[in-house]
Image (tube, rainbow, N blue to C red; front, side):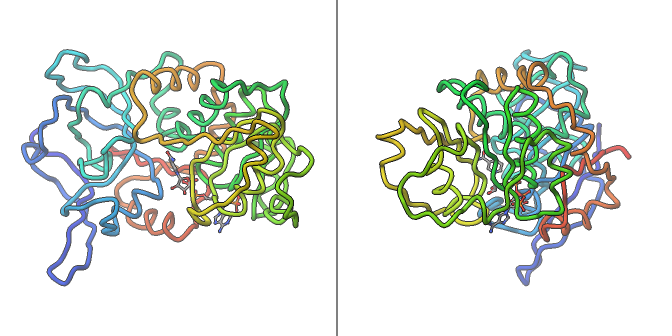
Length: 332
Ligand SMILES: NC(=O)c1ccc[n+]([C@@H]2O[C@H](COP(=O)([O-])OP(=O)(O)OC[C@H]3O[C@@H](n4cnc5c(N)ncnc54)[C@H](OP(=O)(O)O)[C@@H]3O)[C@@H](O)[C@H]2O)c1
């Protein structure tokens, strides 16, 4: 490929950011060893931030966002992949300070590249993407630490969000009862269709308790919210339960007493999907293609767009108007 089409985010002399779709010379992409012709990307909140010039995500512009990419290997310098191999890349520095999946061509270190797991289509992989991988990584860590469906239900906060809805469907596929906590009562039917066994409102999740521990309400959970939500989750987690912490949509702060930890043996597990080492990524993707494969990905896959709709869809994700996953077909 001599040229490739990409979203190109540029900074003007007034410090504003502009998004254009243009054809760019392939030789301007820094060579990181493995070249991939991208078939699909998907929209994440982080991509919206990068596409708006958020310097905490992307330091230098012009830039092409896109933290998720699925496609075909064109060339691999260290021979770890062959031309034509179907692969996926999520996280690491992709789309942050490395040109990302909103371009038809990327170059990344082979360490970042995951062979497409047997039994998973390109579309399924991109619908899962970073959101699905993060939810599954949370469950992987919990199970390493002794969680299993016999211990009882898992609670998911921010359940209608990208990571939350993936967690609901993946945990249900893995055999767990799932309690979905949501601020949107109108999403109850959607969450039940994804596999939630019960729905609680944000207020119910928080309760009015100030005691350090209350009667057990769940055996573990995944928190995307932080703050009082996480505090309430810990307070009501059962004996030797695990709480996987992955997000901060409310606040990065939380406070707790040590009682849930020293009386009930509750574990707080951190989830850092972008930096996860490859050996663990391979295991988690194998689970996602096998026993944890969500049965309801088609419900989470909201739509597939082309470059012509990308700008508006990025504004939607930043404005909180997106439900589920929006896939970008780079060749539509
Ligand atoms: N650690 C990692 O590796 C990793 C990877 C990916 C994402 N994340 C983080 O995970 C979090 C969720 O990401 P996402 O992509 O799922 O975001 P999202 O799609 O925007 O979903 C967030 C959900 O949280 C709930 N929510 C929003 N504001 C809230 C508030 N003030 N209080 C309580 N709940 C609130 C809403 O769900 P309901 O209305 O259903 O409650 C919302 O849909 C973010 O903080 C993101 O940075 C972390």
